[in-house]
Structures are given as structure tokens and as C-alpha cells.
Image 1 (cartoon, rainbow, N blue to C red):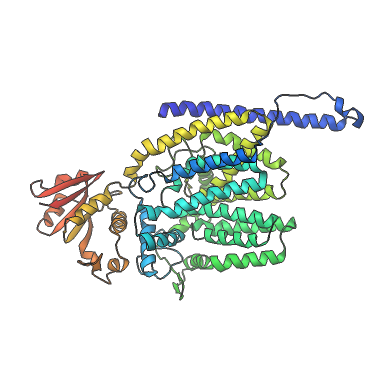
Image 2 (cartoon, rainbow, N blue to C red):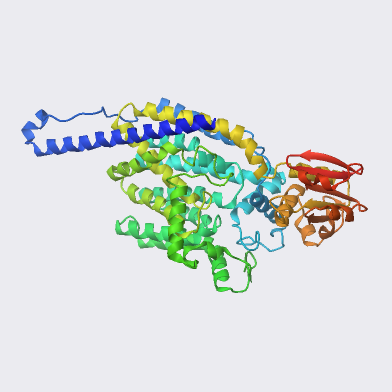
Length: 580
């Protein structure tokens, strides 16, 4: 599979380069022809001999055929995102588990797991905080359906599907139905969009709220002003998706405001109302950033807590706070290049090896997309689409060492230019729509096969597959105490094991805080006594032999247990150990 994919990637990349080059040549010839005709006397223009290379076309379909194809694309896109949802990827990521645990606490008590009332931003690991919107969205599903893998991942799935819809609608409104249909097909089979839609990570909500804001912003600029104000709701909610928005979204909004004010598309009253709507929603997050920058005390209000995090190291992730800014800028540009143009392999949970984020053959179309944008006659389209891409690139410049999830704001921008590039080639050379369809169709089939096959098998270990089953078995033994490996992620990472335990155990926040000894209707030892996170050795196991205890261990730690005294149940890389 890997070797075949490499060969196909090389062939398709070469085909994309040739396709883009041929379309550009054809466009250049058409410009030359237009100049010849313009220079000729009006009476002789019809007789001017012009060059001809390829037959131009367009993407014109009857309404019935158009909507049938669109319906099939929707079924495909939704189908591959909901198939085996909750079980692929297997296991659960620690950051997603943390968002879910705080979501359960919010659903139960309107606090995070530590008891902080309605936090604007979450404590997470302490040294590195977490955005809060995902947890608040998870809380809604937990309230009605309980905490599990599906309810914890549903907000990301729903917003990813919404993001795809917004992309289709935006491209249709800006560039026509043909571009919209290409956008729908492109996003349905996009590797980045598929991967991030099926697991829970707070920052991956950001691009979907952003593209929603762009859609309503465009409608507000071209139609009714109320859509401008709706767009501000989306942009304000972006602030609660990822911390990098503090130096991204406001800059983007100011640039858009200045540009469209100069073009007389926005009035002072529009700007004032938009600013009011945005700040009415975003101010708790903005104030949280100010509190932590200036090291002010935590502010507790009746409806929100603006928390100070003394152990925060997040500012070190920003270029302006680096020890050597110019050196760091060079590193940032390299990371930006790797995660966009070159699509180099990233962390296992961010991409699938061999497919990149956009498919490797897409980048030639992205560059050609600039030509299509420049020749577009849609008023205002150039500025909006360009600003969207620049916002993502701005993240890559200012954020140190970006990877795919850190720079996720850029990918809808890249998609828009890719769609424009594909649309350009189809319009310049009539039959290119079939070659493009074949390329992306083949890659799409391979992507789906890999995601639910080799990728699904490999990602399990990264998401601690088996930990939850091992914990369930250990708890089902009725043991008074539980000893759980502190080495699930690596030696001594007890905090990772703890958050996974709280997720699978559905730990009550007040039980975790020590306010009660009751959980799941049972009276138990206090949390601090019942749950113990240890790196197992022979001596540590010997010290607990006389206790009423069960264990969740790595399979490699079975050597420390006497087989005559214990039962073993293996689950993935983990093992439940119970007393005989």
C-alpha cells in the first residue's frame, strides 16, 4: 500500500503540475488573443487570426443533475465521518479526555473538575491551559446522554460538518455553483478534514467557527447587514476555541474593517455594532489573557471566572516572547512551509501517512487559484478570500513550531485556493474536469481504505486503546483500592493516566475534589486513597499485596506480579490485574 501510494502520489503530482501549466498557457493565449482583437480596427476584428491551444469549457450542470451530485457528495462526506464513529480512532486522546471530564463537571455543577465556577478558560495541565468552548459543548451532550466516547466527540463532528457546509455555501456565493460543487467534493474527501472531525481536541473547533464567520460576513457585506452581526458571534466564539486567536482574530477583523471601509462597503454604524457584538461575547477571554499577562489576581464574577494561572508557559509559544526572535522567525517559517506547502508528516493523530493534509497533488492547483481569484469579477471576493488565507499564515509566522493542529486556521484558506485552481483548469480546458475527478476519486478511495484500515490499527496505541477496558475490569472486581500505571504515555506521566481514569470512570467532580465519598451511588474510599498512580516495580507491588486492591498496568509490567496470586486480563497494551 505504501509503495503503491508513493507511486500514485508522484504520478498525480506530475499530472497536476502539467494540468495547471496547460491551463495557464491556455489562459495566456486567450489574453494574447484578446489583445490582438482589441488592437484591430473594429471593422476587421472578426477576421483577426488568433492562436488556439485547448478548447475552453465551464462547469455548467442542469439544476436537477447539480443537486443529485451534491446530494451524493453530502451522503459520501457525512457517511465516512459517522461510520464507526466513537470506535475509530480506538481509545481516547488525553486532551480530549480532559475536555470531556471538565465538560461533565460543567454539566453537573457548572464548574470545571477543580470546582472553578464557569471558567472562561480551563486549567488543563496547569502549565498549558485549554480553551473552554469544547468542554461547554460537550457538557450539553453529557447532560442528556452521559459521558462516553461518542458524546465527547460529537461537538467536533457536528462543527466539522457545519464547516464543510459553510465552505460550500461561501464558494457558491462568491464564485458560482460550479465552484461550490467542487468545494463540496473537495472537503468531503479532504484528509485533514476527515481526520480532525472524528476525535476531540479543543483547538480543532477554531477553523469551523472561522469559516462560519466568513460565510456570514460575506452575506452581510453583499446583502443584509444583520448577517454582519451574526458573523461577529462566530468570530467571538473563535476566541474560546484556541488561545492563538488573541493575536489572530482581532488582527483579521481590523484588516477586514479597514479594507471594506475604504471600499465603502461598511458604514461607521456597522463597525460600532459589530464591535459591540464581538466584545459582548469575547471580553471574558480577552480579560483572561490580560489577567495572565499582567499577573493580576483571579476575578470571580457571578456568571464567569477570569482565572490567573501562575504556572503558565504558553507565552513562550509566541514569537514576540522568544529569547531570540529572529532565529525563531526562521524556524517558524520552516515549520509553516512544512505544514502547508510540503505537507510533511506530522503527529500520528493529525494526519495519515502518504496523504498529507490536502493530498500532495493539490498544491499546484493552490498556486493557480491565485490567478482565478485575480480574474474574478465578484466584488469583494478577492479581499475576503485573501484575508482568510493570510490569517492562517499569520498564525504560522507568530506561533513557534506550528504543527497541523496549531495552524489549523490556514486549511480552509488553502482549500478555497485549491478549489479556485481546480475551477480554473476546468474552465480553461474543457475535459480537465474528468481528469481532476479521477485523480481525487482514486485518492479518496485510498484515503477511506487507509483510515478505516491501517491507520485505525496504528492509531490505537497513540490513544491508549485498552486502558478503559482494563479499568472497567479492575473496578468490576470490587477492590477497595485501585493502583493505576503512571506510565501510560511515558515514564512518570501520572497526570495523563489520571485524566484517562477520570474519563472512563466518569468521576464525579465533587468526589475528585474530596467534597464527598459517594460516587455512582456507592460509598467509597476518598478519591486520594482509592486511586493511586504509580510506576510499578517488584517492590511497589509487594507493598500492596495485603491490600484489597486491583491494578491497571502496562502489559510489560506483568513480570512484577505473582501469577499464582493474580488474574490477568489483557486489553491492547494494558492489563487488568485482580486478586484470585
